[in-house]
Image (cartoon, rainbow, N blue to C red; front, side, top):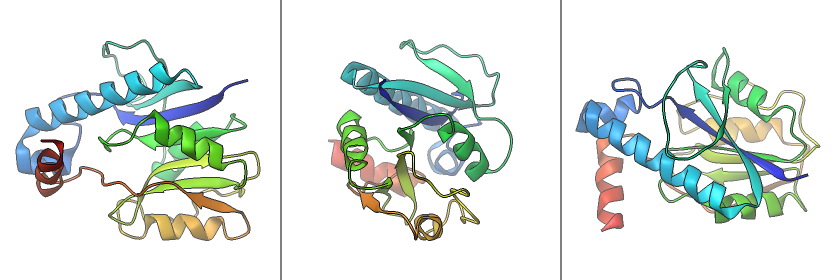
Length: 191
């Protein structure tokens, strides 16, 4: 049985994605960035053929087309931690990642899943104190995320408290694109 990677994303709709980024670059540019990053990531993950790929989308029943065939599931209700825990549940070995890290790729997921050979959990830390990927083996805390302060510099540290009795590994630190400044930095490095 293949490992699974779950990509967490909002449905690509004008005015509903990357709202902090949109405040600085506009709704249309934010939607273009979100859609392009999501499509590029899904294509790369599917091309690797090393794992099953699932897109966990919100709103649950959103209808939209993508140029890549992918299994879709709804994220369901609740805060980010509840939705992520639900998406991670049912898989023996699984990685869950966001779609707003343009540098993230299938090699990162492969490294995280390989890390589960010696760790119970592997994180892809983000430069802002959060994380862009979590990979889990079968040995997990009952409450995966506890009282994590999402969208803050404390998200990774808060989550790691739940894993204090587990072996934890890390893959490379990347930067997500949440603001216009992040976007400008991404464009400068892309060129």
